[in-house]
Image (cartoon, rainbow, N blue to C red; front, side, top):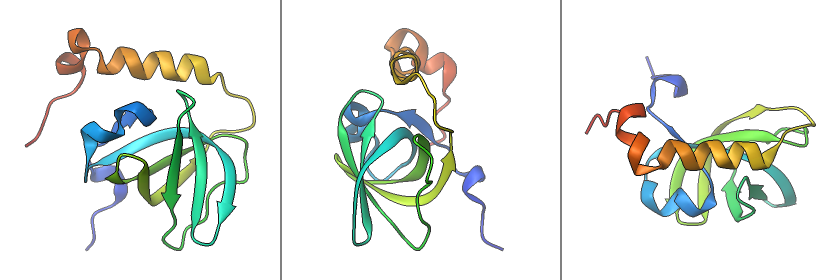
Length: 115
């Protein structure tokens, strides 16, 4: 039986944090910018652009969504799943929360590394 995506440890990130999570599963709150064959360009909470490669699943039609996927390189995530977040979201608040979560003063208290 294959493990569900929920069983993978994942961190919420913005575009500037992607290089720290190479080949790991992350969650990126974003909004769509444009779609091309097999890819979406999205804007992360910090305003950076990220390419999301699709693997059969399509992204939400809502204005905001969360991408759950593997970081391929500093600007690309391979989509495993996406979640609708609706049409109204304070991206500044999302980004401030992500930055606090990754602040060295709090990171090790919030996250326990399993490796």
